[in-house]
Image (cartoon, rainbow, N blue to C red; front, side, top):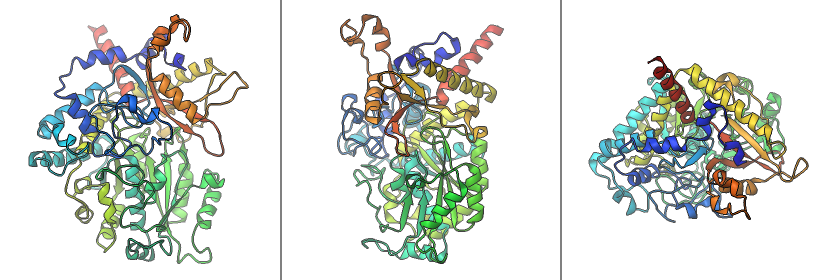
Length: 584
């Protein structure tokens, strides 16, 4: 596997596979006021997956720890370390990271932008505000800092709309501490779009009831999403910590939501082909409480994923659009574009249909984990405000995940239901991510697209050269016109043991492989454990995407190599610089 990440002979590819020296040199060019303070604040105001640990105590090294749940912030607090996915919130130039499908450490340029924002815009926010509270935001921030955070959130919202080419008067942007948290806003959007009967079921249910008498919202989930999506879509806690709460119980409904009001189901687990329109439609009908009448039907929330863990689009847009038309008024569509490996044109097209769009700046664009957002078209914004105007419309437990400033000013009723304390960590994460996004979109698209295509082709060819030890998982190329470079920039790899007829590694074995790839093993090159000639390769540290289990009864997993926007930027900028120098 490490051979896949060695320096190829093709010059352009060198920058993908051997960038550590360049990044280490770049780090000397930037004046960082406090790497520890900026790293710690970038990790604040998030869930348990963001909590930093010392590298030798990271969740990846512990059996029985779910890295999609993470740790409570009360467990330990370190300003510089790694999170549940093995990446940090400070630059790590000594490691080659190809893990943007899961999580990335910020590059030095964007980290420097965050350091400037922390020191200048947020009034020199320092470690002392975090250490006393075990790494979570304190309610006693200086007034200058509070105002600075609010201004930064507002600026982030404007910058995001601009980089995506969206009109601020037509689209509402809700900032979310992760893409998973954004699912809760999606669920509320589904309730808000429901019939008066379903809204009445939602608002009349009281916290403390054992189980709701009937469901108000039926969420249809797709495979290959994060493990916490099902809980969040069902208005349940999905991690060991919430952005505004130090410790919560994963799987429990958030305060103010009665169990059974929102039901999330996954058709694939019931053997349904989600590319088959009739099959999906029949499945939705079968899950309604009373098939003899539509009067008691729950509102349907269809989750379409534009970039699954392996890069697929599910269901196809033709299926989504047809269902939205045929079930008009009874179905709300959420587009999960959290990987953001799609073009801005794709985002605009889905919003124009009235679909809710979820995205992050921390996957493809390489911002620090996690920075999510929920984009609402105007019709959904009005429905959400109407829901917020009703008694019991907004569950009080939402305050564990969102603050008033996460909501735009055009949603005053929803804002009033949340706490005033702003989320400084989330604001800094988005400022960092937007630096990456703007940098990428300033470059000529014909160059960025060409680099993406060549990288994918090169990596796939390298994998094929090591068959049968490793093999590319073919996942199709649906909705290719909307992809970055019109290619799938996540290359999923199957690892085989003992030759062509050997077994396939499961997730546990792949996590061990991932850990080994991220470790300097040069000390083992003693001629006994490993050959001395392998010392150079064994010293290379590589971070790959989180290993995942395939669905539909598969017993093996895959490991993923992902191309990120910052990787593309470095190649294109270097090529443009060389071209200018040649002209001189």
